[in-house]
Image (cartoon, rainbow, N blue to C red; front, side, top):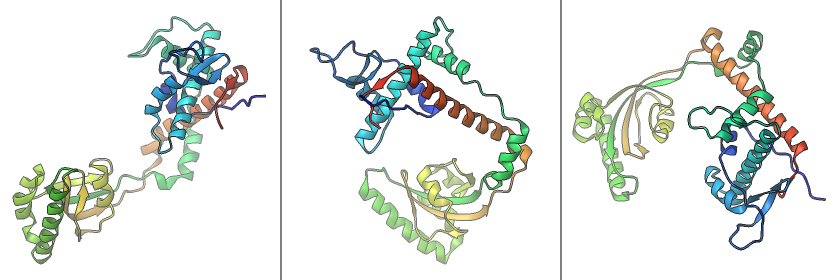
Length: 283
């Protein structure tokens, strides 16, 4: 007997699952891609799985294929249920296809989630107070020694120049604005290299990761980013302050509702799996 595999996927993947695809009517015929995954008698062809894999990047191609196959199986489960319930001529929203609109309405009808009450939100807030803080921020000046990512020679020169500037600034910190005006490729050069206050998410990720690890003062080494090497001086650091419940009640409510909806969708997909047989999907 062939094994029936429960299908579970997070709610964020359902938009991929609803992406249109036309399954092959059979397997083994000339010009058709083979199929080893089926929902009932409908094949999920390897060609469709290969196209879907671009949306499921993974270091292991097998894992990428598995995620792509699961996505297409879920799409077929939902399509079949829409068909069974006679969900046709659903009004589309935005760039939706009729099939995507039907799946949206199906999920809304089958997985209704009430908004969490205030008591639930407050319980979550009390249990996770450390998560609810205003963002940390740093006051920064920098000198950007620009170099293209693929230009290793320019990057080496930038790092060497940066190290020279750091040595000079250790002896005479007041020259930072002068060096910024002379060497920096950033528009902030005209402001002495001043980037003002920076919070998480406001700058290039690789620059930001290193920036928020620094202590106040001139950094002893350059920071490298996709733009080149940066000579950095942290003028001030402000740690985020604890927020009151009123400041984050709406965010907590949205989070709890999203979590509940995801669990409801998982449960609903398991129910569909009891209706429609899935074959050929590995554990």
